[in-house]
Image (cartoon, rainbow, N blue to C red; front, side, top):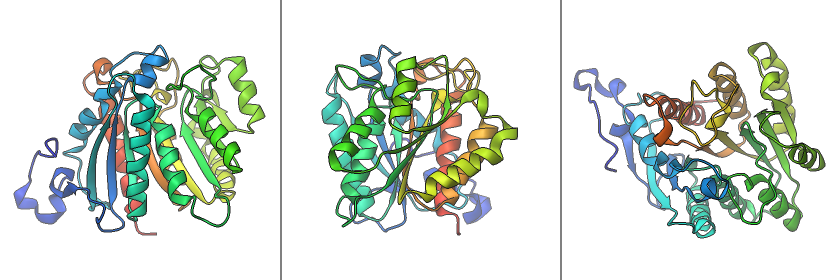
Length: 313
């Protein structure tokens, strides 16, 4: 809780509250309906993927960027602390993170993961899978990923580029359908093998050059059709989907990217579908941030998701 302190506007009353004034520590008996932050302090996946280390510092810096966020629709927020990956013990850290996510979901709360590299996605999905596997029917989980990369890579060891291939294999082993939609894919950051694998797995995607403001109506329709075919949605945002000038503090800055004027209305559309069960933000790397730009963008997206979840229907 050390990061939850900041400005207090005493004369404004309850309407002047900021996040640091409402965040409480999460416990398994926490009231249902709360938004719960769960940090994943990990560099191992990025390092294994030959990326720039520093994402392990992301959760703490992101909390500092959130502490003065004004309270709007969401005023029940808890912090479940961080899962810390020691050295190269990635798989063990992902297992612990999955346990945290399933505990939050079992309490009837909404988890938002704070990364950390995009290897957070494997832990996030496992946590959701363990929460819904008790259902009589095979669950239909839809993954919506804003990302410059498919992250479907085949590698000798799991890393930040493999989580959605791992999820596809997990779904296949369980006899579950694999529903994956990736928005913002860069043709120049993914090999032909990755595009072919995406086709084989029937992934829905749009290139970064196909995601302008004028294309929003068509993308909203695509998302609506995707969400209609699933029971639950896992929303994940990789900050390297944004232009490098907006989000320089990532492992692999984007040469083009997609702007907030596209990402934010699409995130709103996903949330409006009413099926999002958890979300996470990946690839915040404070070591390479400039003027806290990337952390500010990440905090804005976290707050937007939290407000969208808490906003009355």
